[in-house]
Every structure is written in C-alpha cells, then in structure tokens.
Length: 360
Image (cartoon, rainbow, N blue to C red; front, side, top):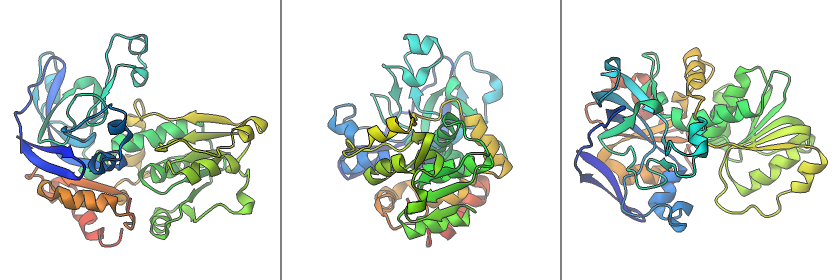
C-alpha cells in the first residue's frame, strides 16, 4: 500500500509499505481524507518540539486527523462495523496505569499518539488499523471533509465545556483558525455573545461569513470585559492578551499550544482577579457532542476547508499549509484515489472551488 513518509526536514515521499493486519478489537480502515495541521507542518519543516526533544524521529508516517471506511474486522469486533464510515481519536493508551484504569486515557503517561508521539505510524497511509474503542461512526449527512476535522475541533468543544459557557457569558476567542472558529461556533450555539479576535483580514472575513463577530484586536473597552476567554492560536501575543480580556472571577481556556515559554505572562493578574485558567488537552469524550452540533448546523466545519490535494501533490499540500495568506484554515489530502466528489458530498468540490479565496 502507499504511505506518506517524512524522512527529514522538507523531505516527504509516497512510499510502498506492507499493509497492516487488524488485531483483536481492531478494524482495518481505508483512509479517505487526511487532515494536515500545524503539528504536521512542524514535522515537515523540522521545527517541531517533538523532534527537538527526542519524542519523535525521522523517518515516520505522519497524520492524526482522518476519515475512512472499515474494510476488515479483527477478532472480537462487532460485524455491524463492516463497511461503516468512521473517524477516530489518535491516543493509544497503555491500559494499565491508574489513569487508564479510571478511564482518563488522555493523562496516560505511557500513551502514544499516532503520527505525533511515540513509535506508531500515523494515518497518512491507504490502510490503518484502529482500536474500536477510539472510533466514532460518521452519519450519512456529514461530509468526509467535515469528518476529517472532528479530531482537532473536538478539542474546541472540550474548551467550551471546560469553561461551562452559558448564554449569560460574554465570550472572547483569540484566533480564527480551525480551533478558534469551531470554539466560537460552539459557544454561540449555547447562546453566548461571542467575539473572535484575529489580526488577519481574511480570517476575520471567514469568521464573519460564519455569522460571527470578528475584530482585529481587542480595544480598550474589551479590557476585563469577558467572562470566558478561549486562547485558540498559541501565539505569544494572544496568550498574554487573554489575561487582560478576562473579567474578575472569569475563566480562561488555553486551547492553542505555544511553541515556547511565554515571557511576560501576567500570572499576578490571574491571582488578583481570581481567574481560573484551564489547559485543554484533546477532544476525547466530546466527539458525539460535536457531531450533533455539525448535524444541527450550529457548527460548520466544511467552511473551514481550503483545499484538498491528491496524494501525489504532498509538496504542494505542505506549501499551502505554510502559506499564512490563505483565508480558510484547513488543508486536506485525498488518500483514497477512488474517493469521488459525490461520495465526499459537496465539501470536496466546494472546497476546491473556494480555494481561490480562502486560509490557516
């Protein structure tokens, strides 16, 4: 089978590798679409902290955002899963530690994350084996493009839930990328007045196209004006500004991941105003809620897709991913060459047509 192989900085190929076999309580999935994110870009250009800290090393198969179809079943798997369209989270927990035994697999100290952390290959191949416990079935009404975005955007729903957002809260979201726009839509679905801040005009235009209020930067009137603040970009400036935006007694969710220590972070301001700060790791446990939001129309994930590249155009896909000028945030790779536009729903053709306009 074909698999994406990163062999060094800015060196990516499509290699022929042996297909895997599903083990007990696993299924074999033919991957349709693969999502690329900032983590993948860091692996591609060599800037990733995972590489620098020795947590990942070349060569490896990347990819942790995917959608596909179950093609074979391992021992002990419900036959009803055969032929089902599915997506799944990327955590592979040890199953033995106290966290795993208590069902808190996101805290497993010995976990792997396919395509990201540890030795397991990622989802950037035609076939992958997947534990049944990690899967979510995709409803017929959801496009493959939207399904490929469930893995990253479930974390945005986690952030909104972690802050216990209600219609009485004023919400600020910093960053109009994939995470920020999903979080803002999820907060709006709860009736919360929500403002998105992003310095890029094209990103603000996309946010407004989704019916959200979008501003370039906080104004003086925004200081301490928001009950709940979601930092979704990971930028140093946004992490610092989150503290200034949150009201006394308010809550901040750090959803984006800064790639270095943030100097000048006002920890004293958090203390003085009795602010609660949450770090948000993954969207495990929030997939069903996100699927319901997408099905209801409250969250539009198709609109976040910039382009879908064929498997043989990986250099172009990563170049597009690195292009900060695009207006729509998500870049996808079509792994299954047999995937037809009609099978993917309007998202495949629509995102190609919309690619001329749109980023991140």
